Amino acid sequence: MNSLSMPCLVNVRQNNGKCFLLLNTTTTTYCLCNRCFTGNQCEIEQYSNNLWIYGISTENKKDYNPYNETIVRSILGIISFASNLLSLQTFVFSKKIRITNLGVYLILYSLTGLSMSIIQTVFAFLNLTLNFKKVSKMNHLIQCGFMYLLINSLNYCLCWLWLYIAVERVLIVYSFVSLYDSRRRSIISSILLYTLIPLSNILPILFGRKGYSYDSYDFCLLNFTSIVYIFYSIFNYINYMASPLSFAFACIFIFKYLIEHRRNLVNDESFRSSLALIAFKHCDFFLPPLIFCLLTSPHFIFDKLMNCLRADSLEVSHTQSVTRLLADSALASTFFFYVCLSKLYLQEFWRTSPFGRFFIHVKKRIIYCCKPSKAKIYAVQHSPSSLPTHTHSLL
Image (cartoon, rainbow, N blue to C red):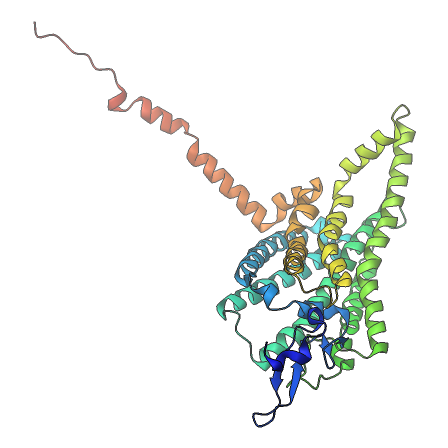
């Protein structure tokens, strides 16, 4: 065994390091640690747990093909773009929807999802075009600094917007507000949302520490001081956990109200039957946030459970890719959950939206071309080839 590798033999699972000569003229060696660890044998974790992905060694990445994942993310980005675009033009072109507070939230939700899908698709295609080469410092700054701030802010805004949509429906059901109240409430709450969320994500740039081991400020490495990391974790948990918990309480109140209302109308129906019928009839309320949580929570939970010590395995690398794709696929379901499941919104899509009317026009043209008209039938019946021929024997 090479004697230069001796300083790195302790806790190999932790350091993933290699030993190099400090200078060509000296025999002094040192251990080159990965970005998670520091120390003589790299056993001291330097950064926060959100950098566990750097704990995956090169050996466990050898079977990983980034092209496959990027191609799938590109396809999901295109589907998400189409889904959010169809939803957006449905809500914008329908006067019945856009003049309501609920319509304002739905428009912002579709617009935010549309922006995220565009960013996701563009950067996926850029990675394919650049063949995953190491990008320049400026591109690295854009992807890890500006894009991190933008993507995280938009993602948090999506979590809060579907909570806004659920709460607005609860308020309407309980008659606390009217469907056609002034939109001042939704506009003010949306302005506050899109102002406070980006401010909470500026912490990595304002309070991050520069790593002396690297040439440039690495915005992807959220190297906080201990106090700033506590505040960052609090903001992170609030943005991810407040919406699902609040939605769970909203579901309880909605179920309670609807079951009581139904039992006043029907006396001989069991509680289980009432519950199943209500869940089926109001699936457009319960299903979207539920599916959104199921798709996005695995990546969030997996990120919190992982650290650099646990990350060095091939299974972790594959699981990380799967959870990331699940989170990306949440954007692709906007049109189905918020338009297709609602009879009213689906009618507005076919009646007022440009794409809906275009699809109806195309359908009519296809039916017209495929269905024979009376004129065509008459022409075929009286064509010379269709007339009976009389042959006379020469005998």
